[in-house]
Image (tube, rainbow, N blue to C red; front, side):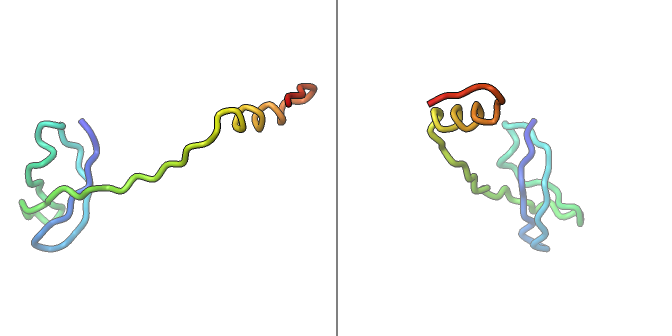
Length: 68
């Protein structure tokens, strides 16, 4: 089961529900009792970082260790 975000097309309330992957696209019941909750597409934000820079940054915080 996964957590999905839905919005009721009747009352416009946004809510979350744990739903199996097989049933994620089916209408879900909103907290107000309407069976009109349609799944929203969530935007995901991530940032890629050069692993060498991350390693050097982490190691620079280690006392007595020096990396170039």
